[in-house]
Amino acid sequence: MPDIILSTLNAKYIHCGFGLRYLLANLGELQTRARIVELDIQQRPLEIVESLLAEDPKIIGFGVYIWNVSLLTEVVMLLKRVCPEVIVIVGGPEVSYEWEQEEIVRHSDYLIAGEADLEFAQLCRELLGGGRPTARIIRAPLPELEQLELPYAFYSDEDLSRRTLYVEASRGCPFSCEFCLSALDDAVRPFPLTRFLEEMKKLLARGARHFKFVDRTFNTSLKTAQAILEFFLERIEPGMLLHFELIPDRLPEELRGIIARFPAGTLQFEVGIQTFNTAVAHNINRRQDYEALERNLLFLRKHTKVHLHADLIVGLPGETIESFGAGFDRLARMGPQEIQVGILKRLRGAPIARHDDEMVYSPLPPYEIVRNRRIDFAELQRMRRFARFWDLVANSGNFIDSAPLIWEGLDSPFDAFAKFSDWLYQQVGRCHGIALERLAEWVFIYLTQVRGLAAAIAAASLWQDWHRSGRCEKPAFLSGLVSNEEVSRARTLKFGAKRQARWAGPVTK
Image 1 (cartoon, rainbow, N blue to C red):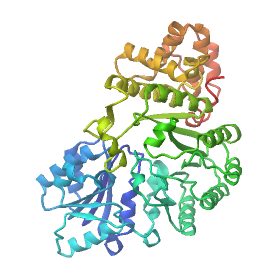
Image 2 (tube, rainbow, N blue to C red; image 1 turned 60 degrees about the horizontal axis):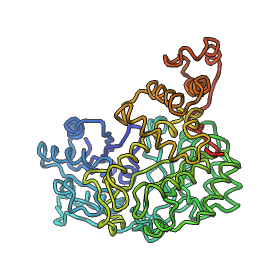
Image 3 (cartoon, rainbow, N blue to C red; image 1 turned 120 degrees about the vertical axis):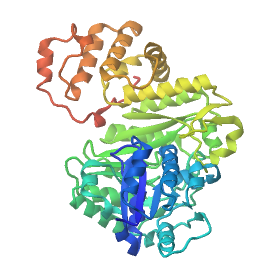
Image 4 (cartoon, rainbow, N blue to C red; image 1 turned 60 degrees about the vertical axis):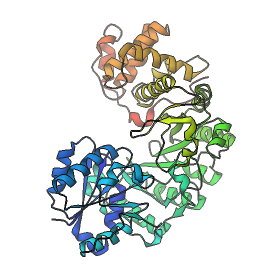
């Protein structure tokens, strides 16, 4: 039985606890006395406690994040009731700042605030050696990355075959955007590149094909970005997928040339734009060259096979619904495959706290804004529905042909989809738990009865979307509009992964 359990509650099974593997890798001589136990937020607190205590540990270390803090608080409270002698150590971004307000910290024995890669091992040595440090709050100094043992050997074969693998070539961020915890970083700290690439080579040799880089700014260093892209380009194999977070206004010719050589379905870039309103960007200390950003995104759409995922945030201080909509339309015209509409969150420790006098947030995770000086509660609720329905219809890959019909020929994709979102909510009264066939039927009804499109045109697009991912049964609402011959023909067709397809190209002409 292990003396030390490293645990967290992942949002989904497919995710991996990256931080847990760093802690295990850096336990030194205690490594053989430790084990990772990953669970997820779909499990019940008593079941989680039972599975952890079945290992009979002396110490349990929990990784606490915005998505699991509520459930983990219940778990820790139960754990200390059932087995108070077990020492509970918590850490992670959700408890590294403003921890005085966190219930989970009050019920735990120790908190390690900050990057705990080395500090956790030191605390465990003291505890297992019979000591009991009197300071419950331990502030971990930033570790020298050259001193860290890398965690990649602790991905299991099951992780490699069934889960997302997180990797990082650097930590930190050079920017100071106030909504983000990375604003607290002083600089980007790179891992030794040769050593990092050797670890990537080992993962590839073990069969890893999906790599999600968690670097906040992958292309900060041109030399490093080039080296990593060239490394993977030389080793391209079917099914390989690389995800990077990109600074959108920094894409020199050297990177453009390499990126253009990657085949379709291999590269996904997440570009955080957040706002196109220059006054709002100044409000939150975000520096961005919008002309360069637009040139770069248009280059990526026209001259590469990259899958583009672009982020915008609703609720930033100074932003109105109208200016957000104008930014959404500008981005939509650049044609990324996905536009992620996020609602502003008040992350603990983020400098956006200086605007608290004009913002009201939910006290419950994920601490989303509920109203501010420019946007009232009703409008923010409307935008939450917009974001949810946009994900279901435009971002999901289920309506590649039919989604653009919602805004096609209209001046503002934002206004057009907002009208659809309002209408859909009036029909179904909810944003979750909508069966795909029922959602497709609502899209058909909207296109024909509200937008006034011919039933044959709407049906042709929806049928194309329906069978693109291998569905060959005819949905009931298309029964009189799709022939049996078309159904038979659909059974002979093969389509690629819908994740890489999505709607694309400028949504307005």
